[in-house]
Length: 220
Image (cartoon, rainbow, N blue to C red; front, side, top):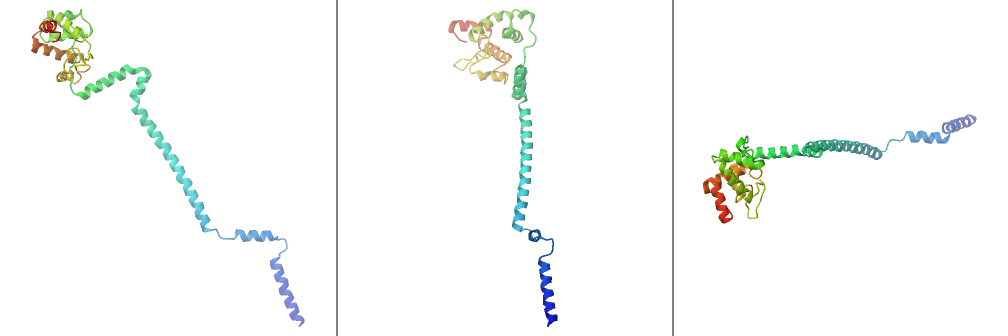
């Protein structure tokens, strides 16, 4: 009986020491239990999703930055001509645009070439008219009539326009009939004068004949 009592007492004491080891507080036991708990799979998925979303957002910001840089570079290249004009090179930009227009049009009246000494008393479009007059086979005496005729009609203004549709130095009607001498008929005095001299030759034989008709009727 005494032996049984000793055995029961030993078992009880061992159980007490197991639960309450010296130097260990209850909080430490709780902490061990918390550390040993398995990770919640739902929380782990949420953490992974947040990390993935953050990575994607960073990549999207980087791509947007690169795209903005490309757009700025393309815009700068496309605006080169405008930038040159703003910088004070407006004349060069205008000439380049006119040259581009002429090149794309395919045909041009060209230039009159050197002004002969016999035409030196004239300047500007009149000098061009005198030069082309001689090239067309008319005598220098016809220039006085041509000068008066086209001074009355347009003042030798290459862009002179009439409500009737007449246009340019010779006041061609319609204006685009001069396109047979060049697609630059709206701006090139050579194209207009060549057309006008041919019109006068076919209709009145000479500039003085056209001037006489204009004097009597008010038109030619």
